Image 1 (cartoon, rainbow, N blue to C red):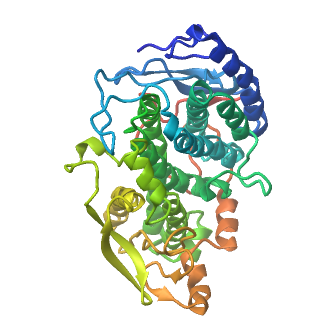
Image 2: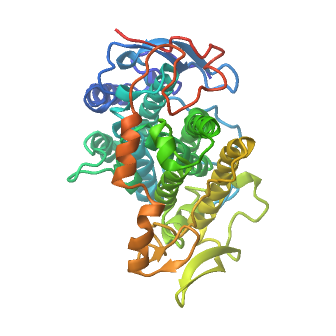
Image 3: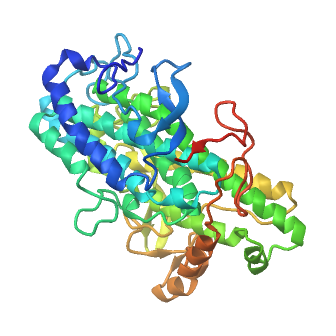
Length: 474
């Protein structure tokens, strides 16, 4: 399915065939561009950035790379190819043809799902607005901007669904997405992680690894939806999302690589000596892992959730890789292990799988997150270091769910409030940690050069060299 770039809004949904919808989206477009100018990447309007732009939704050859000024980026509406004869793969409607229109009885729930997902897309752009001023290299700056424009396009994807299928309510909600802002005390974003500041590049790399990975699992679950336009929208968003997690995983690996090189040079792992040498010590990295992993776990919601159960039984939101799971896809009698508090202990007990869908998705996420941590630890191992990064216990530093009102150590011990306050500075980033990391955030804009605290990538983008001029400043 080729994308029509002759239109004011590029699309592969025959937008010109629905003049009312086209006019509504063209009326929304100036508001979006105004939002991008005011809250998108700061001070970049005139720069030429080597970006990929979707030209097709086919598996191969779907993107084109060229220099683009970001305000001129062609944000559009792209759905993956329809699957002939596709049926709803789970829930009470399993086996029925997928819906091309919103079922009236599920309108409110579907609306809520789309709005919640859509709200995250501009939020991350707002969180990362000022990072370009302290980029560690042109390679990294280009990757930041690529993620930003694609999060903007993902907002367009959700806004299209709201406009096309939810009438006035949808149009009003699309406007609201540009009126809520990350961290705004009066009109914050819907989900807590998207109101957290991203004050420097270490937080950004952790965010793209941990929080964008939550996005992968949410999108993959929605890509199973019985509402086919939503499923097809999310399927293509996942194609773009993969690069975002790549940036986080390889970015932290490069930070570790540079730290290990300095550890070898100085023959020490002492944090103070390493900081003085201009790199980020492993204990500091561990504290940032603890924070971003725990905040991202909250995005999956309550361990037991009737909302998630209802989304599943109604066919609106499935499980990760639903069609690959070997069960009845109805879960009326199935069980799933759930962690909870019992008599001042953390226990894991089987409960109804239908109520544990959030927990199952969180389990998948934890396993996937651990794979990247294992790869980071191989860098430490290759340099002969005994230090290792670890994911904290799932109950650590939680603000939502079963463990929101208790204190738990990274290794899973229940703590008193006094014990928590005594150990918190060893487990979570402190103001001093952020202040130190910010001292390293000096911009490096010479092609091929890297900041002192991060190593070079193993290869460039789209076959280009590492010293390619990925951003041309004007």
